Length: 202
Length: 321
Image (cartoon, rainbow over all chains, first blue to last red; front, side, top):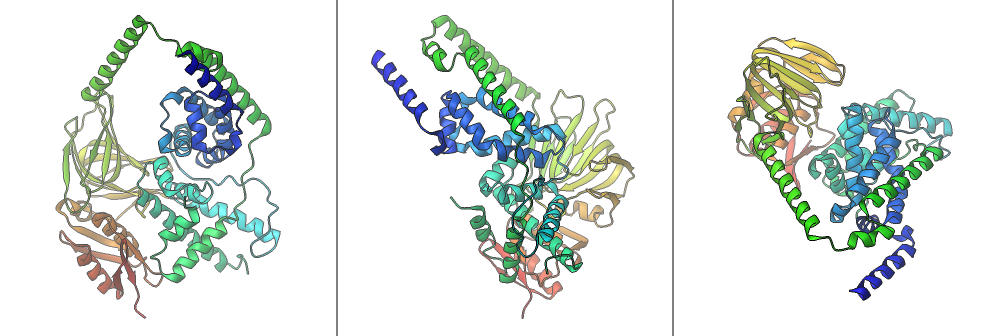
């Protein structure tokens, strides 16, 4: 037993020396389930920005930092019961969603938190056109029914698979897909209306 | 693993070529949205530090990491083990009992599909008929209010009890019952994005959750509650609101897109249409307990002067060349 415990300790140390950057999220979650505080911090670093963005989309007026702290503290508390098989990313998104919605009490409008000046090139024109287009996109997304917008943003910007979105939003995959297609149709119609005013890309 | 774009491509595989191209272009265009600002470095560092401290504190207390890990692995004494076992058993019994006795909310489900209407008697004696696919949740036995959340369509028969108000919440409205029969429709997967309410008898208070405006409805009246507020509705009268309870589909000047959404849900098949089909054109009519989707599609297509064809997951309406 003594020998086995020593071996186990050595293995743990070897693990800690490994570069977490090359680990998958679920590998990190496995290590967190084993009470590895370094893996926990690596997981936080890996997911903090997308989770923060998601919380701001759902609850623009809430404090995303509080939500993040709450989510990760809870994760550490329940680490021994983590079901890594179902995926840590949808789990954390779902935890963040619950807390963000508790904060706002009700999902009203989804807001795309695009508040960073972008130096990228316009797809079809000048920077001025790009700025106007970017504002329009924010506006169009804000006009979508909230759950439709949420499903769409999770797919388009958070790059989550439909099955994960379904898990996060507690919907069927088919419903998620319906939301995404309808969102695209709404956005296309909004773009057509905008272009009809002569302000769209020429 | 498939990328979101690949998943979208699969999703649109059965869509008309022009429509598909337009939607894919829209997907690309939206990618030009302004990127979000990164997290504030100072607050992020503060968050990082507080998490580290909390992990250290909680681990030290729990004895589950680093030097404490060996302590945690130390064999526990038989007394401690027994106490924990008894505590776990007590908690388990309590949770099960709470569920049985009604501390926990309960879910009531409609049939999975088809024309079958399921009637539930709720814990407080109220009766509800649920449309296929609908879900009603809530009604904790010892709660001061009789509060339910509805996703779908339902018909309620409720006795007024001033001590225990009965309320139904949907995505777009909150209905408080003052003793009554009423119908509610709001499908989370639906294209309408609104709650329709029809009141047959008694009185209900309807609150629009977006604007926080409230009205008291009179019998025989229908209202729609959406992000645009509350509006009286002609389309959701008694016949439409109760048609599904006898397996019928009834539409009163509803856009074709809405009608197809209802038909899709009733028969659990995908129904799409090409851009040449006027999905906004109002449709009125009734289908008496249709047992096949094609019975409905055939009549709708004839009325709209379009055709329909099977796809991998359902049907598509299209305009002939």
